[in-house]
Each structure stands twice: as structure tokens, then as C-alpha cells.
Image (cartoon, rainbow, N blue to C red; front, side, top):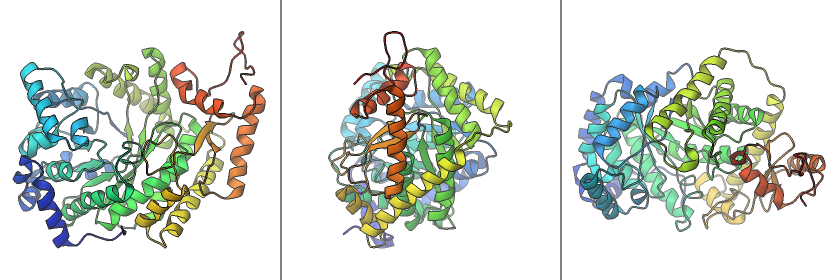
Length: 484
């Protein structure tokens, strides 16, 4: 049975020896030597220190290409032209699936042709030396961003390679990303990642851990995202992690997004141990983008305004070319500058919006319900409780591909564009909270002159890419009509 218990030192060494034998570059990992390497890095490359000392939201894009020289060039461009404060190294899909042989083939082809034959940076294949070359070339902190259910070897190599921040977790890199991996399996794998990060931390190298807050990125109710982030933060803290960045993905309603980010910071400090430094990250819109770049810049700007009001510690930016897939470096940098412009203009304004406190209180109540449910299912143990809560449907994530989640909960926007729950299934929540959601969705249905139905859910999924926030039906004259 999986429990939220610290991995003993001898077990950590055993697993470490085993996983490093999975690919040749694992042999170069030397923990004590890696500690000395981290100690040699200047302060401006130490991720946790830079993030935790910031006095305004720091900006970070997503970016990853297969060849080392190209990755260095890309990050230098985003740092210089995009004015990014923090930088990413996004890992390729083969590495995420532990297909290191296929990643090697792609890397060799990229070296031969000069083309981006992989959709990210194969850090395991580049090995410790390649990672260090990247770290040394860039005068800013760099984070590993990926999507890997089993990230043990990736963590061992990138930590030894000088990376000091590592995204993901056993729930957030299972439920939205994979169908095949069981939740107990991914929790066990990520306990190693967190224990390794904790071992570095105990030697004075603070590895920042960042649960992936947006989950499926599609109308995720804030309380579900926050509860899962807290659980992943708790699991990391048990293993010795002392720098945790809790994430949240933009839903598009400014009141709800600001309330959620404030609740995220408050609840993170409430549930995580006092010796864990909690920061927050806001992901700009993770759903479908408009194909028109001008409209896409509007979506980005709304995210920037939200960040200026809520002031998270970090913002993950988007580009105006999200609709077409991987953006050019120029478009990626433009998204950074657009976000920075909005934040710099708005952050010193005293912007007071009605309804934030009320919405924050509702989000906090919902999150407490979910956390109580998890602890109840696990008899006080969050690891086992998470598994059992997902099995029963008491904890769920909308639109989840994983067999570990029911995926039965369905969200829809209310008349103000806030994400509510349309279909509760077996999600555990107080009856009076459910009634609030029902009443607000009923109000929207009345406004639109139609019955509450799954059609509202489907309309909302596509709304922003179609240029709106709420997926309202329209009559031939452009007004609200009865689509049902």
C-alpha cells in the first residue's frame, strides 16, 4: 500500500542505482560531485532564490528544441528579446514516455539535418555534461518542464546537470497526460523524484518543485486544481522538499481567477508545513486560442491584467501563435513582452473589483471539502487517500484521459463566465455549495432561453477560440437565442 512516508536513505540509493542503469548517461551522475557543482553556480542561476525574492510577477515561457546549440540560442533569445525572468527547458515526448532510444534517434537526425525532429529537449540523452553546458550558457535560472509519469531518470540527470527547478507531480502528470499508468505507480515514482530533490535540499541545494496546476487545461474548477496541487505539495514536503510553487490555470473570468490565485497562496500556506516556502504560478489560458494573432494577443493581455491584480510569483506566458502549435521564437518573445507591458502598466494601480472576496471564500470552502474527503478516504494519509478518492469518484478531474479518474465531473460557465460544476457525478462536496453552482447555472440558462444541458459544456470549451468567454447560442441577428 502506498503511504505518504519518507523514502529511507538506503532505499533511495537502491532506486537511484537501478534507474540510472536504464540509459548510458545515467552512469555520469555523482551526487556528491553534483552538490559541489551546484554550489559553484552564481546566485542569478539559483531558481528558488530568484523566485522567492522577487517583488513582482516573474515571467517564464515554454520552449524546447532537440539540439543543445539551438536550445541555448532559443533561451538566449527569449531572455534577451523576450525579457523572460525565468527560462524553461521543455522535454520531448519520447523522453516523457521513457523511450530514450527513440529520443536518441531523433536527436541524431536533428544533428544531421538541422531540423527540429523532436518536440523538445532530450535531456537524458544529452546527459549531465550537456545539461551543464546549457546551464552555464544562460544567465538566468532554468526549469525542467515536461509531462512525464515516470520522471526518475530525468530528475537524476537534470538535477546533477545543474537544474534547480522541476515541474510536475504524480497526479498532475498522470491524470491529464496518460491513460496507462496507475495512480499508485506514479505516486511511487514521484516519491523518488521528491526524495532526491529533498536530498539535494538537505545538502544546501534547494530544488524548487512545481506541481502542474492547469491539469487538463479545460475549464477545471479552481478548487479541484488547488486541492490536487496541495496534495502534491504535501507529498513533496514529506520527502524533504522545501520550495514548492503551486500552480493555477486561467479560466478567463477575472474575478474567479484573482480569487483562485489568492486562495491558492493562502491554502498552500495553511496545508503545507511551516518550513516550506510556498510560491504561486499563474498559467495563461491553456485552452484553444483564436487563430487570429490579434485576438490571441487579447487573450494574452487578459492573462496579464489578471496577473497584475492577483500578483502571483510567476506567470507562464503564451504566444499569439498558440493556435498553430509550436510558436516561432519571435512569437514566443512577443507573448512575453505583451504580458510584461500589461503587468507593468497595471500593477501599480489600485484595482478593486467587486466579488473577489466572496468568490475566494467559496473556493476555499470547496477546497476544504475536497481535502477533508482525501484525508477521510486515506484515514489521514494523503497518498492513499488520493488513490481511494479517485477510485470512488469523490475526487475527479474534468475531461481526464487517465483510467485512474472517472472523468465524470463536467464544468460549465455561469452567466458571469465563472466556471461552475454542471455534472457533479460522485464528487464529494457540501450540498449548499452544490446548490450555489446549480443556481448560477440556472441563471445562465434563463438568460439564454434554453435548458441546462451538455450543450452548454461543449459550447464553453470552444468559446475563447471562437472569440468569446461564454459559449452562448446566437440567433441569426447576433442576439442570444434558443439553441436547444
